[in-house]
Amino acid sequence: DTEVTQTPKHLVMGMTNKKSLKCEQHMGHRAMYWYKQKAKKPPELMFVYSYEKLSINESVPSRFSPECPNSSLLNLHLHALQPEDSALYLCASSQDDPGQGNTEAFFGQGTRLTVV
Amino acid sequence: GEDVEQSLFLSVREGDSSVINCTYTDSSSTYLYWYKQEPGAGLQLLTYIFSNMDMKQDQRLTVLLNKKDKHLSLRIADTQTGDSAIYFCAESIYNQGGKLIFGQGTELSVKP
Image 1: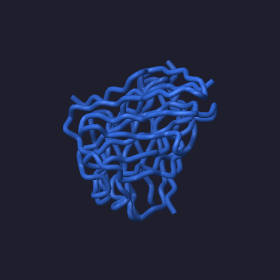
Image 2: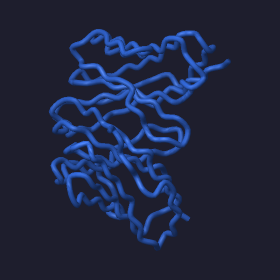
Image 3: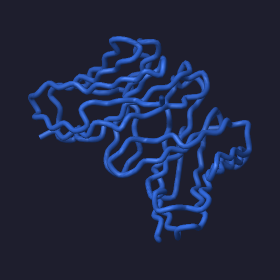
């Protein structure tokens, strides 16, 4: 099983709303990631969790707040987003200690977020 | 600095071989990856190669790495219409916390 599951698949939210994106994996991976992908562009790293601790924050605005409740789950809490935050948000996980070698990352199908 | 470059488009006929090229600049790359993304979907890991290898073959896929020129290629044999997608190469760098640096992606179009 190499599946990373993301919910919801689509989300439309207003600029004053609070919503959360969820990600789950049952591969025993200890590293989990959030990426943002705009149309026709490559994914851009937002956050990395290693062993349930935040290890990388790529200078992401505070309106995006990640949370890793346990080794299988990763959330991204959204608050007061802007229309330019509309994008595909991808979650990924990898087995190895990130940065030590093989970041063989498996991606979910993504949540397509539209901010109106 | 870290930079990964790919050509943006490639068009082939069904049954031909496709070769997608990628160049990278960081010599500390440890692993290099190829991902496939179909419209509206996430990224599917196709294969990867460790930076001290020259070649890796996996069914219809062959990865070639020229470390001296920092050039990576993905060859797809007997290309099918189902191979139409965007292909991203990516590198990971030792001690960069698992960050993947992606190229811009090559859109492969397979014509019947």
